[in-house]
Length: 396
Ligand code: GLY
Image (cartoon, rainbow, N blue to C red; front, side):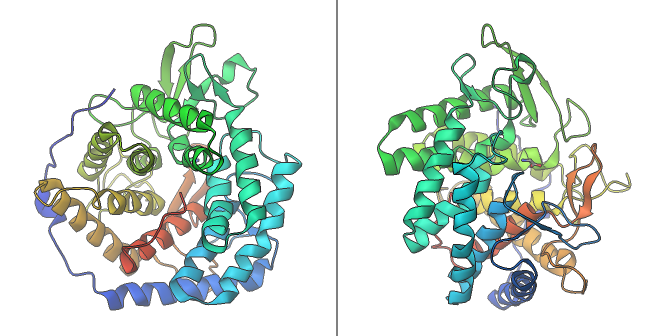
């Protein structure tokens, strides 16, 4: 459903503060020290694991999961922010690994083609005109489209597409569908746009609750396509809001808004964002599930803050000065970024080869808890980039 936009409960928490450019530049220079260290460690064709152990990412090949694209994407941000060709060369060196992965269908039996191929290959096409990267990204979009079910009009997240027990979408996929919108634009094949927009509509219909919190995953009936039930995978409870899922529900609608100019997407963004802002602890960096509060002894997930900041930074571009929420979002962005720079960056952790501390991959599964997660590092870099250069052109 399209939820009503919740009122911001304590707007004074999001009042304007200073976020000087020098502080952003300092944060960037600290981030680049870690990026430089990581380039040396991973070399031209290896990638960080999705989450660190003891704040150290291990090495992996580009053969699975949903994290590799974020490392290449971090390199693209570093290149754009510094103009230093070593970052461009490092990002371009990755491209053959993406080609191999999609041509040979290695570790691609899931929906995360957008996360993997957009910040890496679409960016390589947009920033360097790299034809190999463009071809790999289009192939990834074609593969993603094979997971679309007309019954229910959604892209199946995980599992075999002919497995009726796996017949569900997850809110995260709102960040995978920009790959389809982009492919429709560059190929002229409207099928990709239709699949993406249908998936967006199905997702907001089932994942948004009346109070603007979100379900993580939602099952459909494979025979009729009717929505069946919402369940969590990475959240605390089926009916709670898993923090990062809520953040995907903040940034995701803005990415559809860019391509479709559908005002309902902006409404969903405002609703999910206000729910998130109303459920933040004292320092504005969320716990891994929004049902937890200060004193509950649960870990923070700083990746949620980074993703939500990117969504808000995109949205304020389109909001009228007279919209009272605009000033709230600008205040929230500045306060969250101040806190991340003051308390969550890894500069004082010498062994670390990542950027943001205190992220959570999947608490119920016990993986990547209170560690670096490569997506949080990526969206932190994107948020820094957006703040340093409001004219930044999206990779998504
Ligand atoms: N897309 C999976 C996650 O956010 O953990």
